[in-house]
Amino acid sequence: MAIKWLGGKVDHPMSDAKRARELIDELPSNDPAKALEEITHWLDTINQTGEFKLNQRFENIDLLDSAARKLVRKLSQDYLLMPRQLKFQENRLWNANFGLWRQLGDGYLHCLKQYEDGLIGMTIIRKSLPVIVARIIRALTHQLKWQLLRYGPVEPRIWSELAQVYSIADQQGFADSEIAIYPGVLGESKVRREFLTAMMFSASSPEGLPPLRQEIAERTAAHLASAFRISTRPDGCTHCVDLASPGPPVRLFKGVEPKATMRFIGAGKGLADLHQLIAKILETGAVPDGVNLGGDYGKENVIGTFRHLALYWSERPPARSSERRRSAGRITVVPGLNDILKTLDPSDDDTLDFSLNQPAGSGESWIVEDVSEGGYGAVIPTVKSDWIRVGTLVGVRSEGSKYWGIGLIRRIVRDAQQQRHVGIQVLTKTAIPVKISRSGTLSFTNADRGTEQAILLSTGPDSKGEIGVVLRCGLFNGRDRLDMTVRDKSFQLTPVSLVEGSDDFDWVKFKAQVRAGG
Image 1: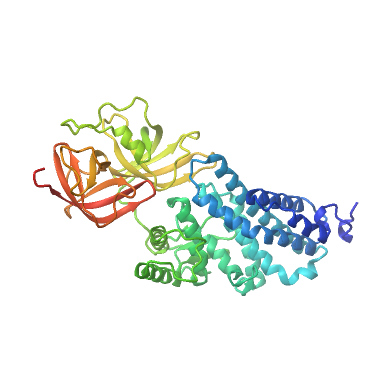
Image 2: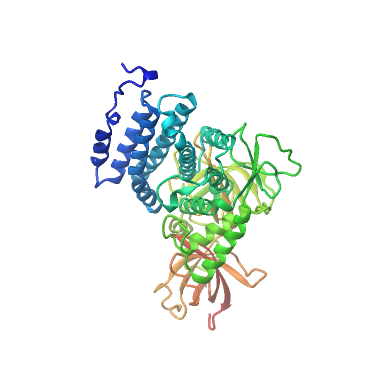
């Protein structure tokens, strides 16, 4: 048996440096998920083996960390870009990514504990302590992100460990030291910068973003973190955390009293830098060189995410447009434009009462928690709604109503019991199915040729003379006029602006004019 305080022989394959490198070389090259699972397994076994000297433990974890780096980047992209319907593969990729970051974080935390306990290898690794602390924070940030990609809940230990390791760096005076966390230019950072990335990402209301935009948000926070502010005073800050009572950053309220364990944070100069990035992308149509968002996600996704961040990093976050009232009841919900159009079942008769002849039992029944003029807060049944994500278009019908409305999922939070609580913005309480075609191709004799179903969101124009229409993605290009028929009238639609879009639908504002002869 190994005598721990003398650093005896360790009963583990990776206790031999040559065998450790062989294990890395033997990882499957044609199955990245399998390779990452094997790396995670070896990290777990190292974390469960207490006999490693500190320097030996760190070297092995670093070896596995290095081998995982390219794999985790690829699998992260695969997860973000894959269809949500592939649940088995989605779960495998989520578990592979989160599991790797969990075991890496635990491994580096084990190194830190051995260092604090003064065990064998401490002297050799003393210079690596800032790197270990920074890697712990980065691993915890990725754990935070991966839990939020499923809309939580975030484990309390993540906040506790973030506070613990940042406090160590702060107390020992290296929180603001420039260090090479990983090889290469992108690996250079500071413990303070890593901590602020996690805090400001959490402060960005990520539960209001779909997974792809959450990834952009976390990468943006990392890019701008050097300009963020952290202080023992609230001046110039928007949020605070208490290192002695760990939790997510909370918005500052007027008259808050600082105490020694509190840290105040804010976007600082990063907010101005973010606005400059938005202006640059709008001018050039491309993300500037040197801004690493992890992939090419398209201008609309990037700009949409940046604007979301700008709102939540500002001193005045978005205010609720109407009062929320507690309520008890149910709503019936239909997901996605295709199913909504099937449920509305438009006909060619001379009536606008499209509430008739709805399929019995169509849609899912959700429990309403609160109601406002702008929408609902609801609870989704645990076994339902694998399709749900922020930005999903839904058909909504309340109890006792004959009419279907249209809404958008704006927020998702998962509680400790794994129930999902959602916020739904209602776009209209009465959805009117219509037919759309390219201008000049529609007539009453060929009304079904070249037409698409769509949804009109109002019975008349707004104060600007505009109407809102929800179309299938791809029909709107921002230039061409469209023709719309509803009931016995035909209108020509002139595009004004795209309000919101996804791979499922476009919500567009138009100017409408009655067609001659319509």
